[in-house]
Length: 66
Image (cartoon, helix red, strand yellow):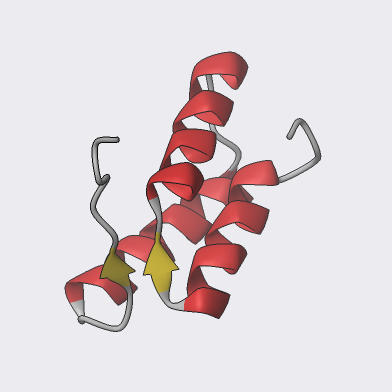
């Protein structure tokens, strides 16, 4: 993805569809791995995503293992 605040954009996508899909999760992990650090904006976005998941407003979609 490699855009400014790519993780925030991925979190926004998850919030819009109210689901954390394996694809979104993998893209977030890839960005973290490639960057090697996390910006304050992306960190805050991940905190929001975790809070929304903890509150049950975002569904974690399991990997179907195909």
